[in-house]
Length: 241
Length: 300
Image (tube, rainbow over all chains, first blue to last red):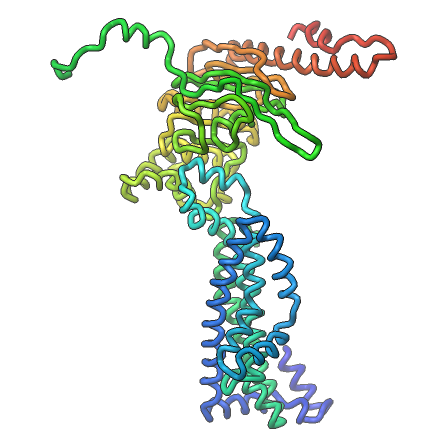
């Protein structure tokens, strides 16, 4: 549907072709990038950074979330802090990362972690704080020792909220990764975007944008979305179709 | 029998026979809560005993502290004064020997039916996981839910959920079962069926049970002994022993008679409360007939 609109707009010459290239030009450019051996390594680099950075943020976010969810005082102190961080656009982390890390790879990880951790920490904390006392009491009376509480009750009970946070964190982290790559990477989707701009190559810019959206959505739907669906079905939270 | 085991002397036997030992005892236990309005006394000094194997029912209007009392025995809360003893030892927290069944089913939605029942068996380290599964199956069959072991909790009806909760509470074989209006949220038909099943199961397992309800017929149908509570602050008003044979039908005339007796006690209690209030409010108006007289005149 969108492509048809796009094609007609192009054929009608609404905008000059250096601003609005045809879908075929975009496809051709992507193909060229593929053949030249730029595309795959860039995509792989972005995904690899994302995987490592995001794994870090999940760990950090879960730890903060657990601490905040079980300790009211800590929650009071840290929650507004994290909420504040969350309102910060992910690109805003790029300058500070440049100042701290220079043009090093670590700087990109830093941006990813700072972008996605707050969302994960906040939902984890909310999820844990929202566990009904009834579950905890039931588990206690069923003889769950305190050290097993976290794994057997607190984590699974908070899981729906945690997964929501992780999904949101993924999207934010993906934003962060591409923004950081725009400025400091020598490989990656963001770098290809940057190159497209430098060379005035509109087909490449649009092509890479599409790929970025595609992979963001793909992982969101098929990885985290699938996990979320599974949990909802099990809990009976999903609306009946 | 081994011939060389010394027989206990007859004196000891005769001492042990007449009164079964107290499984749970409260010694002038009190509970007060601090709220922003001040200190609220939930429970006035309560002294009571629950004997081994006894089915004790606590009845009273809402807010009479009967749930608080149950929480004290369960170890979720601690008395402000006095003592709560189980097997002669002070309660220091929730324990494996006292299983609690809540008004809401409290089943874990992330586990399926059988895993919910197995949850309480995790503590038994000597059991292998297949043993645990077998024990869980046995108790699910006991509540007639053997076919639903792989169902998720949200797929069950309210009555089925409470039956799973009952199976989960029974599976670890606790000596004491504490039940806080476990059938309160169910419809009448489901409830009646559960009373039958529950009596059958309790007769078979012979546990010490403390059961909280505000349903007088439920109390008369299930209890060996019924304690009637007054409200705000709660204390024991009367004790009624129900010496009817079991199993008892829910609409058995004898059960109805006891239910009526409990109801009458509760009504006088309510009436006294209202009577006090109306005296206060009519201090400068017409004399008001105490409401208690109305209830008593009805001869309920």
